[in-house]
Length: 605
Image (cartoon, rainbow, N blue to C red; front, side):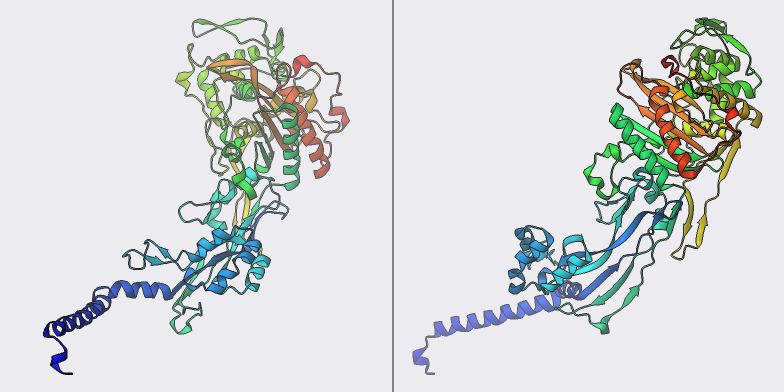
């Protein structure tokens, strides 16, 4: 080209522009290949790497007869790779939304959001999204429908989901699998699920490999793989039928009295095996999010209350075991005061006036003043010692989370100005759980020996071979067998026409038990209208097979909610069904039974 047609100035600027373009291109190459090379290699590697988690199957939970209480089913976690979405995939969103039951726009957002940590591809912290969860758990049949749509960017990962076939059955004993807000994995919450998680959970596996842009695995780059190990199974001591009886009776009590809470416990005295444990309010572990948090706690273990007259079991046992009193020894229960420690103390009132009573009658008629007289003879040190021996003020050893130890005050706190020695023997000033009251009665039923409650029988593998065995455990001898026999006879009289729990009586089986009607503290004062109604007893009295405890918190009814009126009939209903179910036969014949007579409402406390 002739220089006459190109001015030097234009040639200079054109050359400068061309050199600038090449310079910018060169700088971009330097930036990509040198400066940003480590970051871009990391991004590219993350796009190729695939880390697949292979979930282990959580072990089953069985009752004593092999019925499944908790199990695991196969589901699919469905997700989309936004980087692989094509226009054809977007056209199938309405069909996918219909299958999943989700709004189309929500799915569209998941399909089109491609970056995490930055708004643009050039952002330093931007990372491509390779997996967005569309549904954490869909049925395998639903996943088959999704696959039939042939959406290349959508695929699923097999996993497991916890289910409870009995719904509310033994919900508080089993616990549930909740969601961890941090990693969104299922984590055990309460009950056996949490207590035995070490055995149940197994070990998840994983596989690390690489794939191309079409999600095809590059076998030549496959690196490491660890196979999952399934969890072990757990066999409980629970009996599903007895658990059902208990829960049905809870429903009856709620329908009749609209109480604040109910707890029912059934166990075997010789082994300490827990056969049933039911509470109100309750919940369904399959849908735990639909219930208030207060429904999820196991009231039989966590809630404390003053045991009331059921504490007289301990008072009478201590007096007899220490030879302070005899069954025939008599006390004038009409006297309103007693001298103790150099002072005159006012005795608690009885619900109905009582005269001179023997120790046996003090127990069967539940005299507050009679119990106070025995407590005064014992003194605070011995009374506290026996309460401790019976298990009050300490956890039972059941092993479930959330258990309270209750409250048993030290000896020094039993003074004239605080917890009077005249009040503690009738169950005031002591806080106990339902299970502790149940355990106290088990001492009498088991000839004076306190058994540690057992809920877990064994841990097994997939072939039902025993991996860990949990044997019955005797904690200690609390009272002599002779003392226990004396108490046994007294507690049988409780269920006689002259006792406080005639409504707990069975037609052919001898029942022994004790009522309790504890006034609740309201605004720092004992209420005359709010009570905790209790009956705890066992059968047959001659050779105990079952202990049943029924506790009703704040039953709504006309008059006082005596334990003999509220809880004793519930005991009767459960016991009658259990006798038929277990085939329990009378012991000793009908000559040993007390004929049931007319009701005397004055004695139902």
